[in-house]
Length: 390
Ligand SMILES: *Cc1c(COP(=O)(O)O)cnc(C)c1O
Image 1 (cartoon, rainbow, N blue to C red):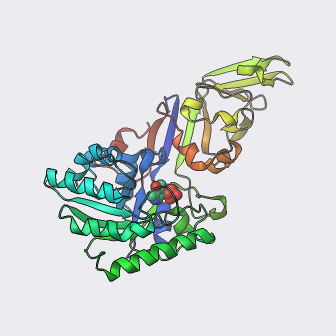
Image 2 (cartoon, rainbow, N blue to C red):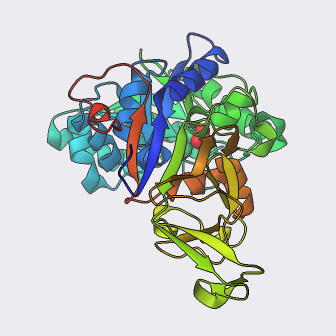
Image 3 (spheres, rainbow, N blue to C red):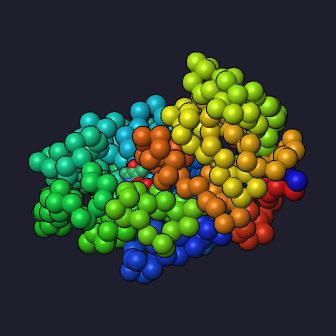
């Protein structure tokens, strides 16, 4: 029996199944880069990356050098790509350990070239082109100069050329087509000048939305995050193909009977309309229960939905269990995931809380222990085995 106050159960077999389904949507020549930034969207980057690389993924993408180094230090030797800009002072360990860095400007390219020279080891870089996202990346009119800067520098090795889509529904959106046309124009011009030569240069553009919406071309790699975790990036791309990987569970820490007319929690926002039995759960917004679920969300106890009443606080959530048979302390409550035939999906919570599924995943707090189920028997180096429940 689980003895934690709250735990996130990561189903590695569901991850495998999602990666396999995504793999089937792309050519076998296209590499699958699993995006494992933000601790693999709250799933635990080390265990997820190890597992993905052992099944259907060829490379891992992260946001910063610290995330990349965490994976290198955990023994991951596959291609690791930092997907956004780096502060120069963060880069030395990453360059030394062959982590591939993103170069979104000529200035950063020059800085990294000089740094790599000092370190005596070339930096492998992905040139990031802003084809319309308007955030990171070199503007189209300067993309060729940046590629020339990389080519001229003896201490920069071109590892990739990338762009990122703004449209959350991918290929269904006209802006995605404009972005791809801009990117394509740059690639053609760059090829014409011999700027894309090199054996391991990956051209990549598609994220989950790109893959699920059939965005073409796929080029050499796709960067898949949320879909691998079993969640559609946009309701318009929902598909039966994806299995939720993460469940979040907790245990009833206290039971309380209220008289009709008694209020619950901060602000007294909910008043018991009848004699009410409450189950108090030891999780609140610090643990990732969105405050916006106050008075609207529900949790699963004994396979049934019980409504959240009153405000979610930092440490506690109160649910009305009047309609359930007598419950005991320590019984499991499911905040995300399945219990019997019922399931609460991250998408549902995001909608209720007025946010996107990505944010719900990333908010799962430090007090929630990550546990792993399924997957192959792991080598002692992997942390997965140590945290398998039971
Ligand atoms: C986060 C990210 C991705 C993955 O996005 P999903 O929508 O989760 O698939 C891909 N590329 C870049 C550059 C990213 O930052």
